[in-house]
Length: 252
Image (cartoon, rainbow, N blue to C red; front, side, top):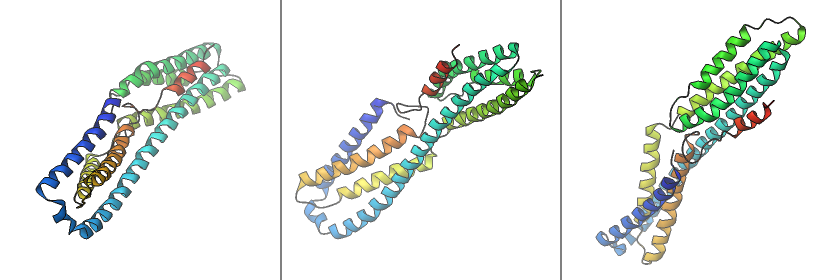
């Protein structure tokens, strides 16, 4: 969960730190002395780099999959809300008006309150109260005709789906990577970058370019994970567009 400024500054500082580490290492341990150990250093860096690449790639894939699942869940929640609104047309007039009003209020609460509160890592409750009112209203409907019975049955099914998707959304908004995984990612990246600085090379410019590219790639991968591992917080987050579209579909 990073903002745009942090996403830009972190790679810059990481790259600068890596280059400074390489420059300091060159001052206290001459490249000529390290060059005699390049075969051993190269073998170790190959193992470290491959292992860390697998870890980094897997974590990036995992958080992106979770982000996509959160985005899909929001779409399903909004679609269930629109279905409840449309099925209300088959209920008695008084219940139809009440249920459709509650459906519009739910979309408004999600956009105006849920999204800002989830962005602040808070658990929203306004939409939950509206959801509870929708359940109470549907459970007290007195139906008579077959059309009303069918509409109520399908509305209850869609409301159940809506409730489930809302609970999933709140769970996804509060979940995050365990600290131990962040420890593995950060320490593994630092060790891998430091190992690349150990090479003894007579061409300091070329070695510096390699360290620059290596540290930039690793840091950008870590920043990407930090950006998307919280689907509803930070500069990269799931949009509320699905509910804005639902609002348009529920206009009289």
